[in-house]
Image (tube, rainbow, N blue to C red; front, side, top):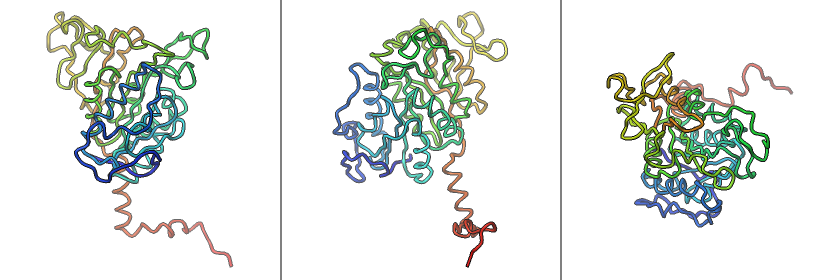
Length: 350
């Protein structure tokens, strides 16, 4: 398990070096938690704080980097090292930290506006490079901190303060976007399902390389009940993915998935086809086509909404490849920075 560093330390934190036997309370800072009453961020924070002791790493070896937005206040509330950074740039800052300190556990907290609008390029390239960071994207389908404008994940027709006649934009699907960027680990969870969220966090922590988790998060002030159709454990459209198991959902598992035309996935009555035709979930498929097809089941009415791990494949992380490259250069005597800077295109005057 990797760990995290003193860079960007929050002034309010007091850390005990190399503490062991930590509990959730040890990851609660002395800062007042300031979100709107009923915000889903509270549930995510509690789940995250309860999960962190399972890393079995001292607090000074865990860092939480955020951008700008309601979700990005989270580092203040976690008693570890962290940084409330620049709008959209949290993946870039986390990349520098993870690449220079491979002993650290680096977590990025971001939102749908922060990560997918101004931060879109930073996010996709961190995932493409497979930097050893874990990205938690809180998706409430609205801009909350700036008081209710539509975001890159707001549905078409969404009436907000900035779209009084309805949004014209076609929204991003964060899971599809991450898979399109060749992320080696992609998952989704829900703020109100603590057990499921913590299981996904554990899987992400165990993954070497970039991990991307979309978390459906309720904003009770500006987009209340946006995910209500799948909030109940028995919601008919909720598809709980389990590696190695046939994909079954609906009342008593009466529905399943099969392949339709051109490789798309389609929902069918499970007893209407042979068991062998039902899709068995496999997160380890190197080709992301299957995981992408799963992500395309999403629709506006949440009639087919998968949660869980979509993809988890081994691939060398950027930081490990960089470290190996630097070591090879040193061994070959090519590690002289001054010589590199003063190469053939430089000369001395006088």
